[in-house]
Amino acid sequence: MPIFKQKWFCEDTVPGKRFGKIKHCFLIDKLVFKGKSPYQEILIFDNPVYGRIFVLDGIVQLSETDEHIYHEMITHPILFSHPNPQKVLIVGGGDGGALREVLKHPVKEVYLVDIDKKVIEISEKYLPFVSEGAFNDKRLKLFIGDGVKFIKKFKDYFDIVIIDSNDPVGPSLALYSANFYKEVFKSLKKEGMMVAQIGSFLDFKNLVKKAFLKLKKIFAYVQIYKLTIPSYHCGEYCFIGASKKINLNKTDFKQIKKRFDKLNLLIQTRYYSPEIHFASITIPKPWRI
Image (cartoon, rainbow, N blue to C red):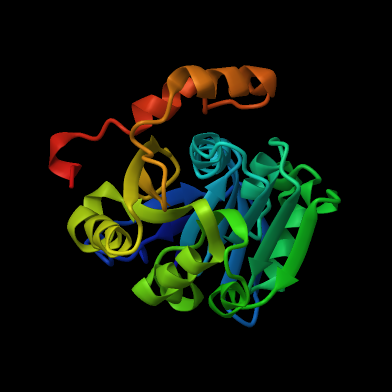
């Protein structure tokens, strides 16, 4: 559990090899919210370096300073790799950041299902800089419920599925299972793609590689995306994309640049660009599979 001493929050509950062995601490300038939902403990506080910080079950989910890195990289690389994404599902993502980025594309429908209604309510109230009003967009269809059960209702329906989950503990654990990935596969159209938050490269063997191999048994193409998020317990993290038909490692730079420029995203994104897209799939030798 997180500890409070002299106005410090210390994160030591991150799953994997760091559990209980490394404390990642933040000075609390101001305690904004502390409470519980039916599913998890919620903490929000202000820090002089990272601004407002959002914590679930003792694990930092985002900070005001660098949340854009996470949310831009879990959305744009996979959306630009698809030729024409129209129907998108976000599993989790109750803070609204992934939703905000998806809606920068000319999609027709975005389904968002999150098990914890209170996370959405608290985020809208105390973290408005994350969603930036995205929950009011008419293209959004919002559902409160279990993403594992929800996705079973759909077959050959979505172009993109984004799994914006917590680390593999508590209510998010089932979102890392092979059975769930199979249901995601079924819900996607023939050119469908998915992307999931997996974790830190520090846990390459027991988290990243295992997830990659699970997905490789289901999807034709699987690709790791590398990114750096300073406020996280171990700065270098990864997302994993998977596709039924399109090789995510051979997307066309000129085509992505053309679409990027047409959407005028240069003034709407702070981290992602077509250049970053291709740099993110360059993986150091120890982490190649």
